[in-house]
Each structure stands twice: as C-alpha cells, then as structure tokens.
Length: 318
Image (cartoon, rainbow, N blue to C red; front, side, top):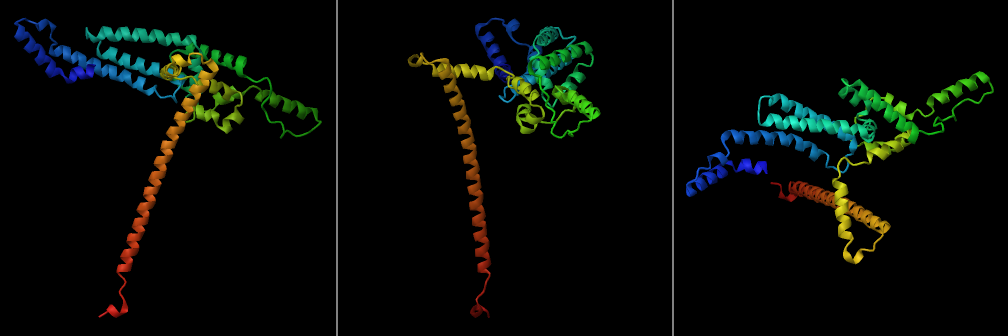
C-alpha cells in the first residue's frame, strides 16, 4: 500500500488540491506535506528490510534453525534505525517500540529448546554461530548448552555402545582388555560431543545432509534427533495451506471422512503434486534434448551438403 501511495504522490496531491478548490474549503491541515511524504518514504525503506526475512522463510525447505538468525538480523536492523532516527520525533518512537517488542519475543524464545537445538544441529552453524553472536552473554550460552546436552542425554542418547569392536584384537591379556574397555567407554554415547567438536560444514540443506547414509552410520542416534527438529517448518504457511486443502476435501457430502482417510488423501494430493512437478521438469528436459539433437542433426547435414558441393567432377575441370 505504501509503495502504491508513494508512486501516486503527484496524483494524490493534485486530487486534494482540486477537491479543496472545488468546495472552497481549506484542507491544508489534512493534506500530506513534503515532510510527511519524506517520512512515508523512510518508513517504506525500513519495512522493506523487514520484508526480506518474511520472504526468505517462506520456503518449505527451511526450518526453525533460522529463527534465531532471523531475530538477530531484525534486531540489527532496528538498532541501526534507532541510531539514525534518534532525533526524529516521528520515526524514532516507532522504532523504539518495535525494538522493545522484538527483544521481548527474542527472550521468550528461551522457553523452548527447539530453536537452539535445530540451529546447533545444522552443520553449517553448530555452536560456533551462537558463540559468536552471544559473546557478550556467556550466561545465555552456558544455560543453553546445558539444556541441549540434557535433551540429548534424556531422549536420544543410546544406552548401547556404537563403537565397532570387530577390529579390536582378541586377547586374554588383562592389560589390553582393560585398555580397550576404556576406549569403548570414551566412545560410548559420544555422538553429540563428537559432532560438536568438529568445525562447521558449508552445506545448504541440513535435513538432507542428516539423511545421507554416511551421517546415518556415523551418528545413528544424533541423526534421529536432528531429523526430528529440522523437520519443524520456519513458518506456519505450509500448515495453513494444509488446513485450507482439508477444508476443500471435507465438503458437506464427505463430512463423515475419518482422520486416517483425510490424512491419506492429503498425503496423496501432495505426492501427486510433487510427481506432476517432476514430470513437467522431465518433460522440459526431454524437449530440450530433442531440440539439441535436431539442431545438431541439421548442422551435420549442412556440413555434409557444403562439403559435397565443393567436390568437382573430373569431366567438369577445364
């Protein structure tokens, strides 16, 4: 709306002036001044920066591991705006109110361990990201690490060793038996610590990375934890679309459908949609390959016809 209004600035001003002249009434107090228009342009520029995060988080492939980075970005935008508008009696109070509300919700995110857990289990960030961003809040970092560690130990950590003992030498020497038992204790339940001790990995899709066979074998229990949290979407847009789709499915003549049947129908609708999208991509690929093949064939024919035309029969010489 702001964009449309600003684009129509001249038309709006002219309309207000003509209306005032036509009725012979002074509407100068109700007409936007040049200063008012400048304020609107500044507000529009500020809101556009906030819109970036909304657009970025709409992708169905993104999950709640981006929520804390989202808060950090928004707080940085507000803090920059606070400095720039410290003397602006119109925009300044707006920005201050927005910063207070945003900071309040950022602190409330501590009530759920899901945000930090998902972020840490993204191999692109791990704890290194929080250690950098929360360098001035060591108590936050300490408390958060304790919560995630406790979650891992209580709900996901295995009670059995994941160490491959097939390579351990068979011996009756009590010294070696005690030594290898100590090694096994070191590796026992250590998937989380091993993962955190390694540097971040530059990947794009954390969920797919954890679903790879390599990670499934190296971190059989931690990968289960990661998949549980990295499946939580960053926004509720997909969930809302699902509710809308269910409403279309559950019409008056089908109001006796059970939950199981409704769930199966929605799954089939989604899978068929994905299949249709893949079919379109495949069809475009085949069409492109056919066009390339035809183009190459015509080019080859052109070369052959050109070379044939250069051949001169012996009786035509002279």
